[in-house]
Length: 306
Image (cartoon, rainbow, N blue to C red; front, top):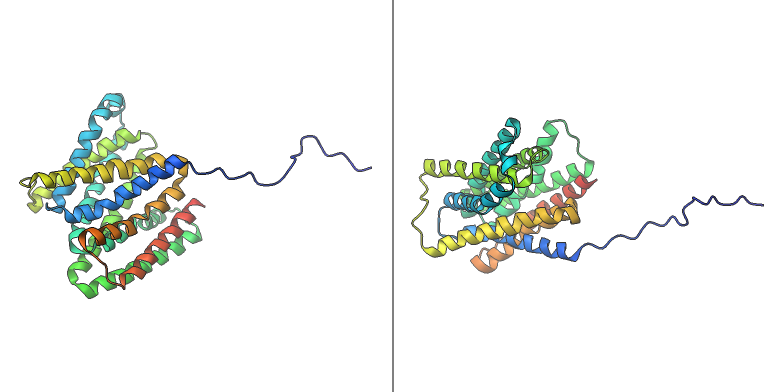
């Protein structure tokens, strides 16, 4: 007589059905991508110095975030430790460098090239983490190699256009590197500090740093028609409040892999907007390079999840 099956044994071994992704979060992610994609073409179209746009964008963000942060996080802001404050300030300084490099690059090379190159931030993050001893999966390194191959092809295409376009590519790559440092420092600070408190300190530091850069470079900070100011407000709302804020909101439900991979749609989104709005059609040889960069970043995102 066969032995009876224990009562505690599972009745079936089939994997549980996957939960559907929340529709609201997917819609919010789509709005986030649209807002981020608009930033590059909007900066390129705004008739004001790129450095001044970067400065006022951050000042306006502090103006929107500041009252809420001071009302709800005043005690936390007063009690931030010295180390966390120094790291948040350093992150803000790197964010200022990021803006100071990327925004001028949009006036020197195409929106498609500048956006594709600045989104290499995950690659620089992997390399910086490797310097500090972190190990990455093989797929991450494969994606890094594919993406950098795309970078080499894209910069070669832009060099054939003009040395100015190549310089714009270099600025965009430098902006991606600065953003990687900003991301790593911010992740360390947010272990002990809320996102709101950290963001206020970071953005305020960024605004001060960009003000210093504008003064040294002699970039005017006013004297434009009202339409330019409304474009800067739209940039702040689209890129900061809708773009980055919504992506931070949905990452908890959708997960970092889906969110980070979807945000890569910024590159084709910005290229399409620039083509239809500004008439910036990249040369045919640039398309394979952009595709290589995007494939590499997708591999990095999937490998990072593992």
